[in-house]
Amino acid sequence: MYLLGYDIGSSSVKACLVNAETGEIVASDFFPKSEMPIHAARPGWAEQDPAMWWENLKLANRSVIEKSGIDVADIKGIGISWQMHGLVAVDREGKVLRPSIIWCDSRAVAYGEKAFRAIGPEKALASLLNSPGNFTASKLAWVKENEPDLYGKIDKIMLPGDYIAMRLTGEVTATVEGLSEGIFWDFQKNGISEEVMSCFGFSYDIIPRLVPIFGFQGAVSAGAARELGLKEGTPVGYRAGDQPNNAVSLNVFHPGEIASTAGTSGVVYGVLGEVNYDPLSRVNTFAHVNHTPEEPRLGVLLCINGTGILNSWIKKNMIQQGLGYDDMNVLASKSPVGSRGISVIPFGNGAERVLQNRDPGSSFHGINFNIHTISDMVRASQEGIVFSFRYGMEIMEEMGMQLNLIRAGNANMFLSSVFRETLASVTGATIELFDTDGAAGAAKAAGIGVGIYSSNEEAFASLRRIMTIEPDVAHRDEYEAAYQRWKRYITK
View 1 (tube, helix red, strand yellow):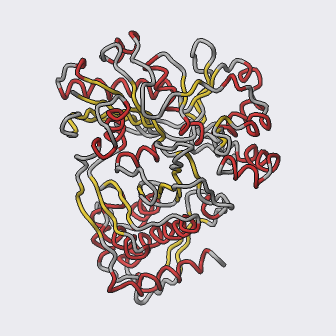
View 2 (view 1 turned 30 degrees about the vertical axis):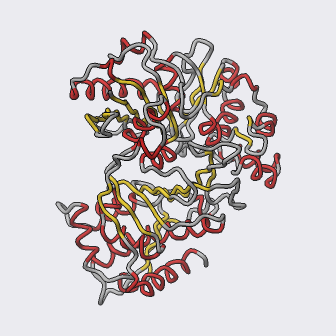
View 3 (view 1 turned 90 degrees about the vertical axis):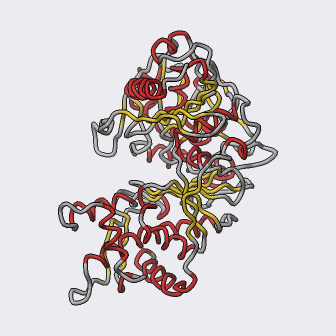
């Protein structure tokens, strides 16, 4: 008995086959092997063809089936994770009308800001928990104004994972989690936001019917079964955006639990047990996968754009050719806590929401040519990334979150001992690293949705913890002094 998970990223599409009885990953693969192209016709734009996601899903799916050699009739459920906040628009026949405007496209910022003022900041935050910002609803507003003929052909709008579900099942559906990340959901009325639909002039008909996040969302159609080599009728039992799903893959379901990633950008995602929001919209609040009106479970998302991309920039421009990230981590470990007084501001990858959409760029402070080495520079860069996490986590604490335990996959920046030890020590949180990823998490979550598992505890009982990192109490004062010095450079 097996479960199949898909993770639809903007770089690649991953498929993972999990043994439902043992929780073991049987096979996984991703396509393309080089990054999927992102089309930018103008500065700040970012689009992808949804058909490209489907074609790469077929390749990844075929690979895991061939590698495993299983009978596809033994696949009992499918789960889907996707890149958040994208817009897919289809006509009555389910034909995609234009390329998807994806998460990193910033053309709709002005539309979100106008709607925020029109609805009223207090009202918008109380019901939407966010400003409309640059999210899916605002992207649709851009299409409505700038491509009116195309807009008139739209029958339904979807997020990227909804599109994949449509291709699998032939049915156009949505979830509360998806609608909340698109800023269509009113948490006070527990329904589609009247204010958003009225302000933007959207018809309710464009919103697909709702299905549960965990539960039957449709079955693989005959056509999809032929394309994918799956059994017709295999149920789709789960879907969620990539950050809620990353939390799911780390068994983060309950208030106070935290999941983190630190790739090109960095995320801290915590579960809140009450309806709340940041009044300055520096962090975003969406429905978590187990949210209900009776028992609120909200995902508070802190995103730092300048994370691994800073580490990558250092490698390309400052590190001797032939040295890799492991070598950089060794260099960083040779410098003491605080990097001998160097502070690095990592915000060099566009406007940062945590700074209220300011774009201060990246900067280096306190360099002394007589004492500092490349080891100090590398460590200071990693510390600067961690300090940006701490800065955002302070906002999350203001919202009532307790950040005592952080769970993360053993990947990217978390492979650096300096990074993870600094994060634990400067926040006071214990860090647990696990061997998992989004596609595996989606597969196991599908097992909950189709009834193989009775709870998340059962579904993720096989989750393997690799390492635990405790705060370095002996050097607490040095970490705190380095953070406070760093913080002065961004609060001037």
